[in-house]
Image 1 (tube, rainbow, N blue to C red):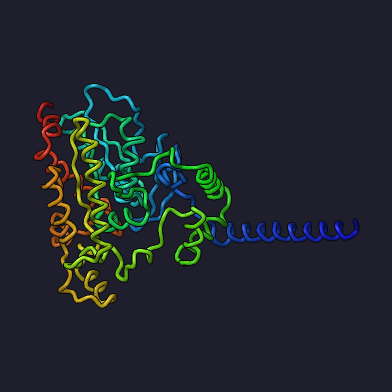
Image 2: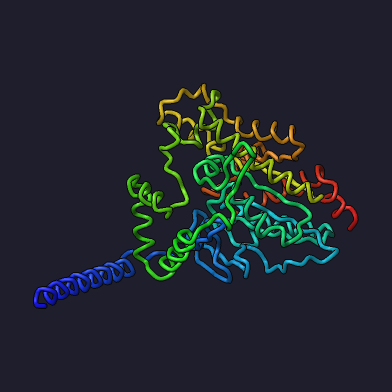
Length: 387
């Protein structure tokens, strides 16, 4: 009995020490390195989403902005699912460029395009579903599980040259099989996964140390491997892809590595799936290509090539765009290539990118999409001409 009492006493002391240690660590993090509020919460279907009815202050490259999300977790005005008969609705799918945390909501291209349509007499609503870090895979899942509830008249897929191919490869939401493409669905998520999602959401909301450790260990490969094994990470290790050169740079190689070709094959399959699903409902579909920062700054591209000992002559700055435009032509998908319009504005001495688009960049995209969609899409054009 005395031995057991001693063991329990030691265990109690150890437990108390751990609790005190964690408490001191949490206090220190809150005082000296407080975690900024997270604009994302885990989601068992989409990976992560914006918290509904939330507001954040965001320190971006263009300054501090207030970022608010509506009751559906979208950076958009409040929209009910049911659409009025005389309203033309556009659902915009995309990542952080569409989310646009670097600018106020009225300066986002979605808001600007909506304003231009209304000024032209078209009663329109733009549903901005952009979420930072999303690839085309998660955008397809959003369309299936949430987007169709809005009954859109047009689905506009904003494709990010910088990282969409990479994101589609490393997250494994969608994979190709002999039966076709298979994407993650709720009935394939077990109790373990549901528990992980709930635990991560609680820790992110209530424990600053969790966010602090997440940030500090994100680049440690061994930590990532453990998290992947425990299913606590959405990403596969990039080294599994046997990539010496980062994917965003590899996209410009004239002779593409095998993994880049695989990434493009998967990405095209996902885009084709979106296209078939949209047009199968009799709805218009378009893709817009968001230029990579490497494309917009020749010096940065040259520097990146030197860093990885790649002869600059082996790179083709427009190759990713050429691939997507040709794919769009073969599939009957209208594809708006925005690269040249960005280069033209920059040659005129105007700065449109501060990491992500600044307000001028969003205005440029809105202007281009209003013009290009008006030429290419009959119902978009009709909404303007009938007004």
